[in-house]
Image (tube, one colour):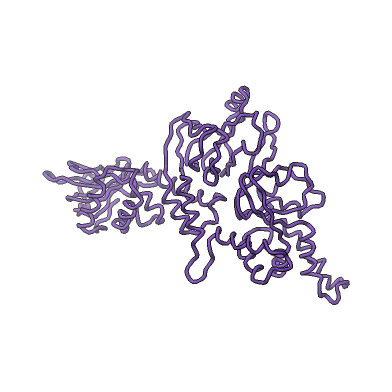
Length: 489
């Protein structure tokens, strides 16, 4: 039978759930209300088996139905809902092949029914009847809304991996996920227009969005970053149509984020975003995000654990500002604690990491200032300590070359290919989108760090068997592991 014969809720809890659901705000309940419902329904099987964040989403879509008469569902009918019996009694039975009644069970308040069909297409294996002369109250969840909850949960997991959010403490991640809104928009709806004040970040749950830019505006700022997962969705016919009118179009699909610059600056939108077909989005308000960032900057885990990202970067800035020869071991430890997640340090001995941290230099750039241009000789790796940098890279398109922008946020590295290959030329132009502070490491500093770690103090440095400097230069090639999307700059 697709039911639980033992009540999952006490009778008093059933009454409380029914009272809460009387608000009728299916899909629009507050965070506090959802948490209250989860607390009451935590033993309901189709709630209990889900992750905590998913539980909060699921109870948002529960509906209350009162005065149910006759029957709730019949055997061999498609499963469309799962039910929690909150009031009255229900008789549940199956039919034998000969049409005889068997397995008759009387369900009491707190029992569940029909949950086997959630997440998959199935048929009811029993019939749920309401005894004559009685009324029944149920909380029900549609299979369609259950599917929507699973999609929303997947979107929230992806949202946590967006560079701007990825390194926030888990507590803040949870707050972000609890605070986002899900919106559904019909075809050809303008989400925002070029010149609008940015208020939200968006992630696509389902459907497509066109990012439309005027081709005459070729500044890096005109190409808003979009971290695309798993990739762009192309529609050549529409793209050619827009091209004829002087616009460049990018098509974004499920998992893509856009408009994230609104979270960190107050500049007007540099492009327009329009839905292509029915589209569902996750939105995160910038003022709420900034409040959470401020909270994250003050957080440190209990017992002297790792501090939050923003706090660590602030500490790293103070240490890097000191001249290299005046940095104490405490400074070095602070820098490594703050920047140890960066890939250019991965796989290197602690001594090399420490020497590299001593070679870092502090620099500042004002908003609009260029860090490097396409074609420049590359000899420096950059680590962004505060602010934001846009890197504009030319990519081939059906109309020739299209400028694509990658956005670098605090705590990320870029330009590291300069350390890996002699004669490297920059393939993009990096511009400070806001006042920035960076740590830089040039080829000379990297060479000195490796030489200090592998050659200094070696009594037999010339011996092939003990040529640690040669080993050090070999180690340098391991830095290639750090190459990722931003390395193309």
